[in-house]
Image 1 (cartoon, rainbow, N blue to C red):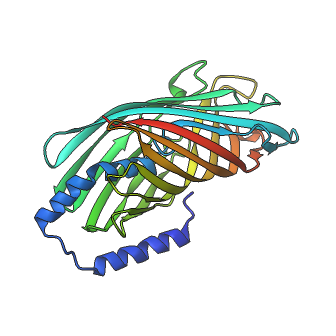
Image 2 (image 1 turned 90 degrees about the vertical axis):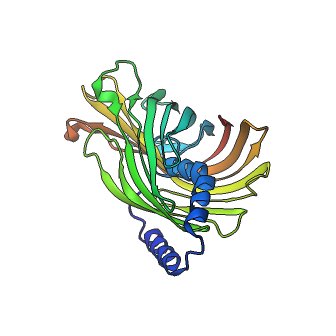
Image 3 (image 1 turned 120 degrees about the vertical axis):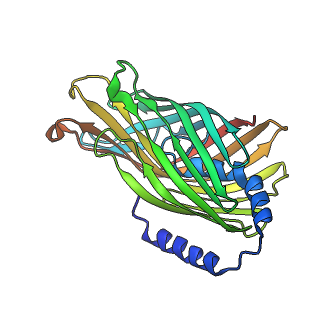
Length: 316
């Protein structure tokens, strides 16, 4: 997920163009622009950079059961389903700072005809974060998601994960915002802290383009429109702790894939909106991580598969 040289070069090129472009807004206009963009800016930062947080979007996702898996035990059909729910409240302390508190739940389920992959894996977490704007153009944001991740049959400290992110976002003008920072993936072993970069480009009031190493999206629609349409490419997955079994006393399962999705968001009323989409999942892999690495089974590679997704969002 961190080998994206072409994308990184593209981001750097866009940043160079934006840096050379004149900043046409004065400080008061920049402050108004930040106030207008704070909600969507924080929303896409969470979607892009908080691992296993809101990246998939809340709702239901179904992958068909005829998706074959290649493993040492031979090919077999494996279905997959996901569900997620989150609720977060952003509380402004003053015009420059605020905090975020919330809770989230995620379910990853496999319908494995061989019974090797677990039936259900859960993620139960809280969201804790905050933002600070020392100048009208600069936004500093940090967030962590302490959570329990696993089959939750025998919960202990091994199931505890804390993915976290710290980001600085600088708005050059009304059309371009560049971000950079650090992200901790919250893995049990060999936890990675990675430098990250991203960009939010608004060529017109109708179009939004977001580019990051693990998430890219284009959406279209006026800010006050009932319908918005989007296309997204993203990396997805997570790590889950498993209860003791024949594989050993300390076992975790990592699942990852890459997804392409198109869909629409419809605002039903002032509070509720509906998200519906279809897409395909690629580079799907499930692999076990054991304390005794010599005893680890071979990874399970799953075929690409289409999926359908449906979500409902409440705006508080």
